[in-house]
Amino acid sequence: MTTNPYQSSSHGSYHEPEKAQVTLTLDERRRAALEEIDNAPFSWFHVKVGLVASVGFFTDAYDIFAINIAATMLGYVYGHTSNQLNTNQSLGVKVATPVGNLVGQLLFGWLADLVGRKRMYGVELMVMIIATFGQALAGQAPAVNVLGVIIVWRFIMGVGIGGDYPMSAIISSEFAATRSRGRLMTAVFAAQGWGQFTAALIGIIVVQAYKSEILSSPFPCVVPVDYAWRLLIGLGCIPGVVALYFRLTIPETPRFTMDVERNVAQATADITNVLNENNATDINALAQTVAAPTATRADFAEYFSKWKNLKVLIGTSYSWFALDIAFYGLGLNSAIILTAINFGSPTGNKTSALYVYQNLYNICVGNLILSVAGLIPGYWVSFLFIDSWGRKPIQLMGFTVLTILFIIMGFAYNALDATTSSKNAFVFLYCLTNFFQNFGPNTTTFVIPGEAFPTRYRSTGYGISAATGKLGAVISQVGFAQLINIGGPNKFVPHIMEILALFMLTGIFSTLLIPETKQRSLEDISNEDQEGYIREVPKPARS
Image (tube, rainbow, N blue to C red):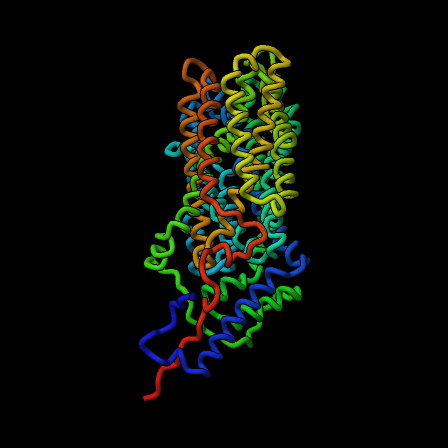
């Protein structure tokens, strides 16, 4: 027999026949409303939600991974005699954003559960826009180092990007129908691949646009390369500006209105408006406050003190941590990996303008190839299978294949680096790792936390999971920078691959802690009894 936490055994007020009838009606209305969302046919509103959220992830990826190209440009402009950033400078500009991500994911994840998804959605995008524009205008002064200014702006930008993760994932999850929720969330996340692709494409365009200036400038071509990196970074503002209005006007999710604000009548009216593609809020809807589980420190501790709930949080968090060790370790250093095996590296005098142009062009092309050959296809193969095959099998398969690929790339590195054909084989394996990251844990670690927790903690739990992932990204960046040149320039690459294989292996075990969420309602996944979940607040007794 189910025990209702709001039923009193010592007082009779909840057992009066007329009160019981009202209580049953409220609870039934909630479950009927949720069922209406879960079974809703795919509509233009779902497309709109997906597009608005996707633009954010497109911008996120562009802003994060453009630095992979821009760091080389910054080296020519601010690298002084070496014409490249030193280890700490390169680490600073690359790691600042993941550190900001970690802060933003925790902060916005908590705020979205505290004040609502709608009130916070768009705020994180404004932070991203301002910080991206600030980077493009960063300058040198006697008391200020330009790289320090860029690092500060990239940290602030990272806070905004970090906030976008829980916001976009949760809004997509809570509006989606059960049968297509995985595909909608994956489509949103797949915009990340197009963002990385576009960063490389814009890199090629700006390098080509300044080709004549680069070739006619004295080495190291400071002025045209300075223009190039500022354009590459600054253009990341545009998609964010386009999406801002739609983010600020998207309606609150009915689940938040019902379960956190505890207003069933308003939530029911909002569902009707959404399904009828009318986003206006019904100001005449009666406020019908109910008693329901409330997010407090004590309730949070009670919920996650149960192993069945805690193991899910551990599973989603560590899986994301392990994945980001590899995803960001490689994604922000792909130019270094390609250079280490001399794939597409220019030949000739390294102190010539021609070398500068060819080096920048080849880095952009290399990143474009990696995006097209591995990253983008991986997202869309996940899109095809995530609601039929399931999240957990895809994640298990991805971690398993990645373990094998990194073992091969690590232990067979010297053989793969021996000839031109073997280098091509290494790049093929490298593209496969990108593919199975996305047709694997990179996608599922984004989707599952957006489904696995109750509404009052869904964004908070998501933020914790994502922030743990970004902790992995930070550790990976610091470790990569400190290890890469042990024994000589780029000599530690094979051992880095072996270390990544170990982390992929541990991800297999953390995946076993995660439930399968396909074709299940969010309420069913939350591990909370839904019958009698809400009750009408009892009226004060008359004296």
